Length: 435
Ligand code: DOR
Image (cartoon, rainbow, N blue to C red; front, side, top):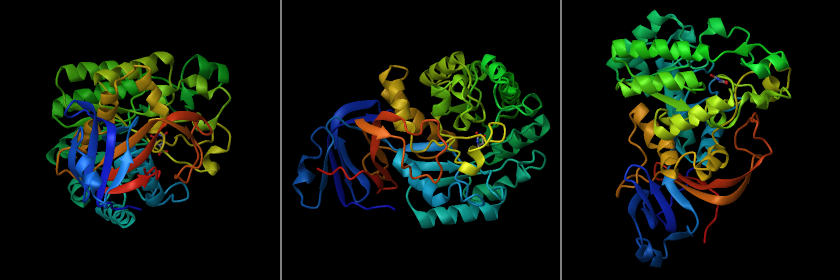
């Protein structure tokens, strides 16, 4: 899918680079896949060359390309929902140069052979880089630790049992200790299953009204609190997946203020939707952890803005109509994310909930730090990994590159879209807006 471009010049574009606090109108020059120059007027000379492709960037923005810590690409095993090729195509369209793939595939990515197969398939496909996340426990059963050295050697950048929680404190302790020896972050799906048995949505007034069994916030908070204590005791790197509750935010803020090795991510849907979205029993709104209340959304936005929550991660979780066109209680949890981040979240930036620089940081440098990746950069000589955004472009959620359609945003219209993505020095998504 990648397209090489010998010389690309984006002129008069707003360049936002949170790493260097750059926010200015400038030209971006990419030569042979590498950043050749960034600065006001930098694109004048190369533009004279006939080889150059020149894009008029007026009114548009260039940000470092995005890094997703949390996507379910469903290969191997559930390719009818998504596969590595369609998942990476969706990522490219969303502005991502790097995608971490969760291990709850079939079979689970709990051994070297599975990790290697995923890496090999992603290389064949090309486009954004895929970084596998290995399981914490064999079969994600919560008992026996995986051979993390093998997983890391095969390319895993973190371990997680995402989809289920590591319920045993003893196993979690050993996981943090063991992963620490390989400098791998341990990503927890924080859910005390003894409190969420049969739960369909957030526990509150809306679940009572709808007659659906609730998933109380405290099920998340208990695990985050316990794990923070374990991270402190072991010195292991702990990362909380898809934070959804105000209590978890409070615990994380306190942990960070004490300098503990703790990081966290939040999804676009938890930043935008509440449990009211479930009224009408739309299965597209069934997700784990569930959509919570306005006070949680407010706490999550504040935590993202002030850095208590480090990163935005999509939790891209494709499901087919088989798993979604059914009764609410039967539906599988999860929603799409990779293609929608810019359209659905730009209103938060416009509304002043966070700055554009923080938005860029939460999608690029911050997640890179969690997995020890060299972040996409505008430094001269760096491999070009950037996203060009037209903040005025109309975007209707339809005709996605993903194989699935499970998003509550389906059919909705937004303002703001990715028009070009570069990953690993190549153009991997291009709306074809050449001037
Ligand atoms: O809603 C969710 N869907 N949450 C998870 O943790 C797993 C995911 C999936 O794999 O579908």
